[in-house]
Image (cartoon, rainbow, N blue to C red; front, side, top):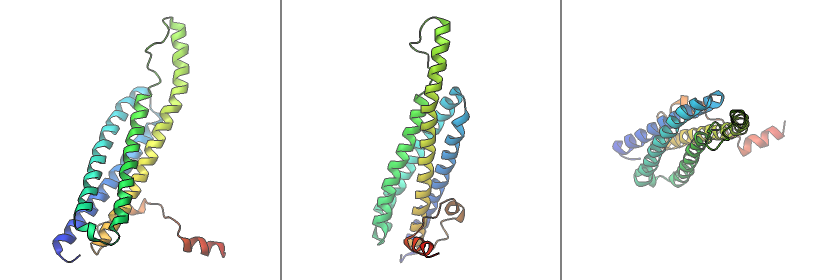
Length: 193
């Protein structure tokens, strides 16, 4: 990039992506921590986390748009990174949907249960046992997707910082949580051992 203004804008966008990455990782951790919570806690905290994830998703969409319509679009590798960000937005939306699914799958909802107290208790126990599996599965899937999104955002932040001519904007704390992906060379060298 030629101008300092362009470089600074790209660095700002990279830092914002890094911040979004950290927020997704934190939100994923909070979602995962709900697995041992009671129904009321899942409903209350899950609703808050769902709304928070929607706000983060909106920020990610805005960042993707800023990158796609700004000077970053002129960078040779930008098409690949922008396509990846589009997929990351979809995964983020899916993660939010799984949070909503967990909240909506409240197994202790007693609407329509029989009138007799003995039957109601028995049905509630069965519904809770069956429903909690659905809730736990949705929470686990949401957390996994949010962590995947965090990783994708960290990689995108690094690519944008590299395009600006520096990797200083992609803090090591964000990239240190990103698992390394084996390359073709790694696979070849490990076979030779």
